[in-house]
Length: 154
Image (cartoon, rainbow, N blue to C red):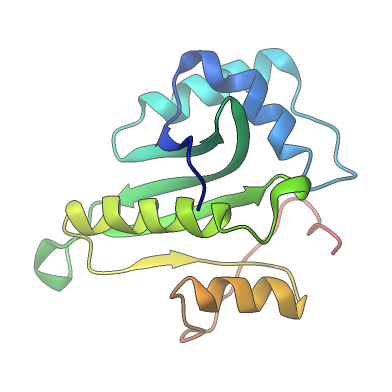
């Protein structure tokens, strides 16, 4: 990685930078309307067990993911964790920043006693799948979903 790299939880004043970064996640999707974005962001960062991890290189936001830790009544009461919205700025891909936020999310989940951490991707790109595998995630389950919006195209 690089000097000047900081990975931390999002705070109230990080919303506009995060919305800008999300333009690199689903490139042809319009951004969330500002009022809704603020309400959803505030709800996410206030929700117990929910963290938006940000990876800054100096002052530039270069990568992010959302981590949600879910209480559980199986596995001896050990929680599980979900990761969503993994994104690295297109100009900074391939430099370890996405792996850095995934590693930080993994460390947080382990620190909370989670017995597993899960993520799903709709991408079929070999490079995306290889990225997740190189970050330590294995294709071990079959996923099902009911969608209320069409899947992103990629």
